[in-house]
Image (cartoon, rainbow, N blue to C red; front, side, top):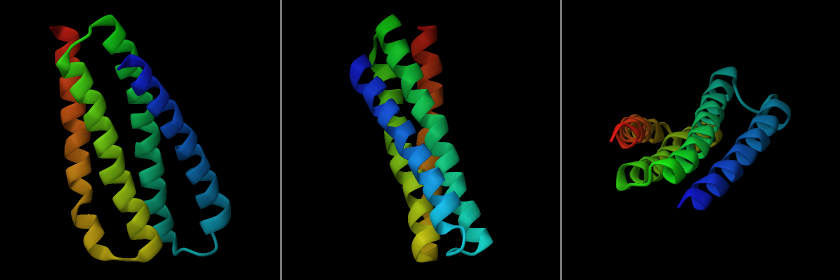
Length: 121
């Protein structure tokens, strides 16, 4: 699992950089400032949790266990739900997408708790 989480984290970081550049150069003149900020929050949290996946890869090699693996899966789910909903919200203007964003945030929070728990045990 450590290799899977490392590769996934690396690819997610790559995508975060690409999406950040796309926002800065391709969306700057197309989105209202508020929606551009929403998009950039998605990019920021994707990058944070791409790096978190690298930490999960390291931790799963050091302290293998189900808590560490669950943390990795929660970071992946959180990125898809949190960042993905923000990307879609900013690009489409569909406001109800903002209602599912906190589910991704909850996945992030649980992932951090499980990562800490897995290291402690």
